Length: 345
Image 1 (cartoon, rainbow, N blue to C red):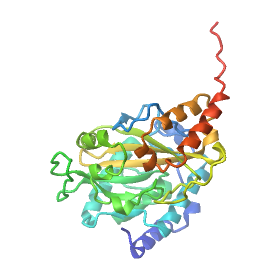
Image 2 (cartoon, rainbow, N blue to C red; image 1 turned 120 degrees about the vertical axis):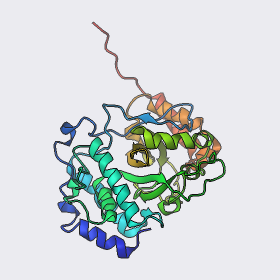
Image 3 (cartoon, one colour; image 1 turned 180 degrees about the vertical axis):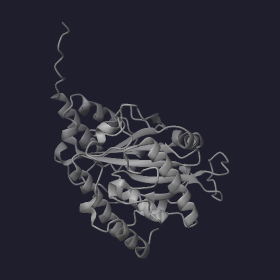
């Protein structure tokens, strides 16, 4: 975990003129490369609901990272990240990660991101243009600079030579582990508790996780050697907070769909020369009523919630409110109207 004695000076080095003066992503970002651009709140809802180890290649017409426009929206997220960095413990890395290890990983990420995203946030020489920073002299500054450049959170997944494989990991001698985490907006978990945990161990608390656990070894290989991949995870929340710490904000008495928020994680994995993977997490939080403006979604979400197991509803913190939410969704669905279909000439 980053101590205040290390974190605060690093932030001051990176933010000498304050975050409000950061250059930010270029205004023509969406036109300079087809893989970057705005993305509406995803709706990855299917029925019946299943927990699957599904890694899908990022489509050619979909951005690798998502930058909100206008620039004020990007700045707002960065300001929230700074607030979390100085008030919580979202930035943590392995105790045995020395300066050489950090620099090696920083170089790997620089190479991968410069190749995938030629308009930033990292240039081939290590410059961080979106925060107006030349190649940081300290590798830890690079990772903090990356945190301040992206609206995404990220986790560096890499092997740890002396890591103990957990039972059920198919005797992996060198499992893929979370070696460095910068997660300012977690969804009900604590970043420092996940540090140095293997992919298998990280997913152990997930309900209905048997398919993910049995695929942990093949997932690790795919994440380090193939991709980039994208997957989505969604839940419902009682407020629009970007960070949800364990036990935060229990559900109040729900009066209707206006009291519910749709929360989606867009997860992207980028291979690092077959030696690791950069795991990006972009959070979308939207009022559920707004998400349900598209006809058919209310019924789809109700059916999905109805097929979730009690264990999964409990894991998502929805067990006490699911019946009421499903009832409200079905009432909304009864008034849904499909979009008008124009006949072909």
